[in-house]
Length: 375
Image (cartoon, rainbow, N blue to C red; front, side):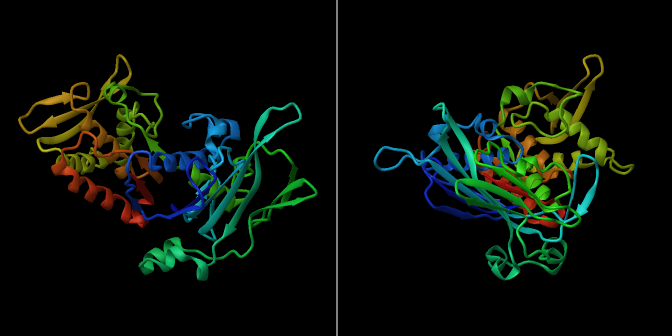
């Protein structure tokens, strides 16, 4: 869970800091920086798994335009970021090795510089990177909120005092030092032109806390739902986690139903999603997923109070957007931050209060859901 973000030198941000809760609503006038904040979160998620050039691809603006414009018309050559996180109690890598996390409150810092090489080519370079434990006595996020004994026991671990990753620079030579963690052996990376973060190279639980930081940042999701994509049936082979545009929504719903169905509730969590949708869209009474065996596609079908059922091809954009958001809230396997711009689009003003209540219900019980939402 992301609990704090600090930004300096990126677009309009100068020494900016924001503490975050499990449900965060960002309000502001046009051009006040709301989308820029989402860009930073997207960049941090990308830095956890990609090199710098790939990480900035898809952000609004060319790489040089990401650096803050100064009063004299020039641009800053550096941008720095820090995030403070609440890590999951345990983490599992792609080889299904699982380890428990002994320190759950962490701070990750990274500084990026725009440099010219000897050929005059501009390159993005990591000049500083650190991963540090946050001690209990200095955990301002914890001090500012009430937590239950169950929450503390399940999530708050303070067993580490030394950094997992630090940067040193001497005589123009830069060294990234990865510290031993559990049975791991520490290692040193020497470079003056790092074009990827150290974090992106941690692909197993050999370094448990660095891997947990990477996985937390990698789990941040951004919804840019496209009505045309939501309407179409989705292939049975589509991704099992919701895509940003929602193109695989029907396949994700089918997977949730298969994983959560019981003898007493054959629809599993789909029944909960349908009930939540009914509270948001008057007239809706049911939600089903049908399989077109010939074309190997799943189709969403929504039942209404008058006994009529419509496919996703003809229901409203707002209804489909709500289904997508409810999928992330009710999917028992989903974790991580959800960033969703303008969630009220297509929702009747009279139902916005109910929508907010559903969002709050879905994220405040962190022990049960381990989710967070930023809208």
